[in-house]
Image (tube, rainbow, N blue to C red):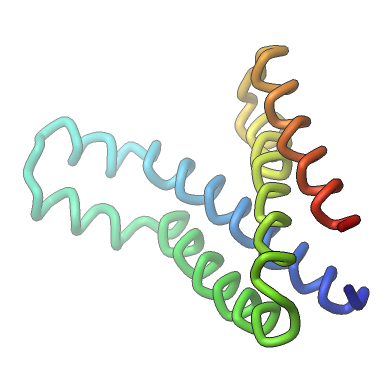
Length: 124
């Protein structure tokens, strides 16, 4: 696989992981939490679309999708898609670093097994 395609895959995976973190921050904001507690669908929708972190997360997903389309135009989906599994590791690391999340040994081992699967697939 050409290095440029690997770069595009890693960019797409990273954008998706950043989207997850941004969405988590946005959904934990006081405005969204209050709206969720009230249970009013309209208020929830308004607070979600007015939260910058949520909008940033959605934008990252959109950009990641555009990058992914470029990947699919260049390589077989059966070769590219396993790399999406790297998103588990990137998201786990960002969750720990940026959100202070704790990760159990079992979760870490499971994530590393997914990464091992990606490596094995990439070598095929």
